Amino acid sequence: MKVTLRIQRYNPERDSEPYYQEFIVEAGDEKERILDLLHQVKWKFDGTLTFRRSCAHGVCGSDGIRINGRNRLACSTLLRDVNYRKPIVIEPLPSIPIIKDLIVDMSDFYRKYEAVKPYMVNNSPPPEHERYQSNDDAEKLFESAKCILCACCTTSCPSSWSDDNYIGPAALLKAYRFVFDTRDEAADERLDAVDTPDGIWRCHTIFNCVEACPKEINLTWHISQLKKRLTEREM
Amino acid sequence: MYKHTGSRGSGAPGWVLQRITGLLLVIVVIGHYFVMHADPASGHTYAAVLERMHHPLWKMFDLTFITVGLWHGLNGTWGIFRDYKMKPAVSLTIYGVIILSGIAFWVLGVNTILSF
Image (cartoon, rainbow over all chains, first blue to last red):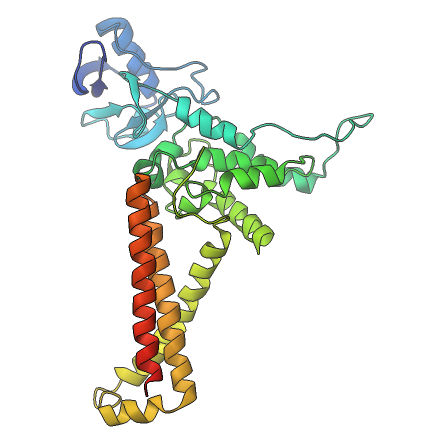
C-alpha cells in the first residue's frame, strides 16, 4: 500500500526556515515501522534526508521525532499506531534548535541532565563484595532506570516550551533515580540542583511527559516523589 | 546555571503553602458563600454587616480570608509569570508590582475590617 509522509525539512546552509516535503512510499503492511519508511525515503528518493537512528529497536533512544503531533520513537511506532490513510506528518522534536531536517541539538538537554549528577556518588570505602541493596529498595528504582534519554518527555513539556531554562522531566527522573538509591551519598547535592526557580517547581503535573515516554515511565509520579522528599527536607 | 531574579532559597515552602492556602480558601469561600450569597435577602445590608463585624470571630474570619486569598492569588500569579523566560529587569519589575500591590490591598483590607 502507498503511504504519504509529510516531512519537515531544513538545511541551515540553504533554507531560511523549515518547510514540508511530501514523499509517497510503499509499505508492506501496517506492522511496518515509521523508521523503515524514513529509510525508504533516504535510500530511494532523497539521500539528503537527515535523521538519527542507531539500534532501531527502542533501546538507544536516538530516533525521537514528532509523528502526527506526538513525540515518539520512529523505530517503535508502527503504521497501525498512526492514521496512515492521511499524510503522516514527521517533524523534529519541538522546542529545541534544529541542526538539520529531523536532527535536533541535544546539548542543552544533556547540560541539564549533567546538572543532577547522573552517576553513583559513594565516597565510603568499597566493601569486599558489591554494595548490597534489598529487593524492595531496588524495586523503587527499576522504572526510573528504564529511561533511554530520547528527550521525548522534556520536549513535550509545556514548561520547557515556555522557559528553555527549565530543567525538564528527563533530568528530574534521573535525579529521582539516584536520590532514592540507598547506595548513593549525594542526595542533597541533587536535591539542591533541582530546587531552583527553573527546577522542579516548574512542573505542574501536566502529564505530557507521561504520554510521550516510549518506555511508559510515569515521570509525573517520580517527580512528585522528589517534591515530597524536598518538602520533607526543607520543612 | 539556573538563576532567576526574585527567588529566595528553596521553592518548597512556597509550593506547600500554595496548597495549604488553597485548601483553606475552599473552606473560607464556602463560608463566605453561605454568609453573603446563599440567601440573597440576608448579609448585604449595612446593618447586617455592622452587626457581624463587631464580633471578633467574624473579624478573624475576614482577616484570614483577605490574608490567605491575597497570598494565594499573588503567589499563583507570580508562579504563572515565572513559567516564562524573562529578562531580569522584567522579572524584577513584575515581582515588585506583585509585592507592592499585595501590601497595598492587604493594608486596605485590614484597615477596612478593623475600622468596624
